[in-house]
Amino acid sequence: MFTRIVVGLDGSEQSDRALGVACDLAQKYGSEIHLVHTPKAETVAFALGAVAGYHAATTMPAPEKVKEAAEKVLASAQENVVGQDLAAEQLHIGATDPADDLVACAEACGADLIVTGRRGLGAVAGTLLGSTSQKISHDAKCAHLTVA
Image 1 (tube, rainbow, N blue to C red):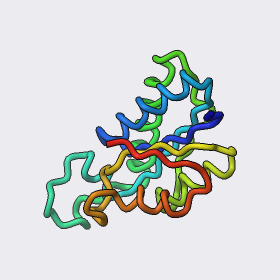
Image 2 (cartoon, rainbow, N blue to C red):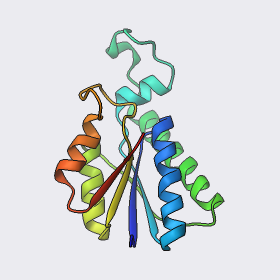
Image 3 (cartoon, helix red, strand yellow):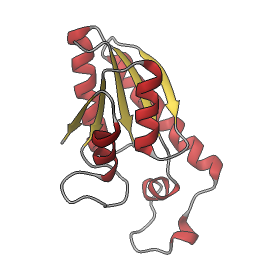
């Protein structure tokens, strides 16, 4: 049913759960897994211990720290995938909007499913569904599964 699954990661607990669901589906259907993470300075600052309400200009990490954090998110996810006797076919670090990067990756690899957490570390734009998940559901040409 699913031959290629693209998983959106941001280092949040919900994206970890999404990866778990994607791995379960991949085992069941013999699917390829493609991992995508689009680092955002704001979420890296949060992950590095920035305090809510602290002035953003004083807490924004340097670009090399953002890239380093992105590589760690993907490495951790890849270890999780390998630990379940699966292989990550592609590790992709996005550079634009997370939803756009996920949809583009899904189209490029011919994915028939995108799996994301319902809400992650990004800005609060949706009440029940994160803004990235909303955009993917609107723009994707394949199925999109959001995991709570």
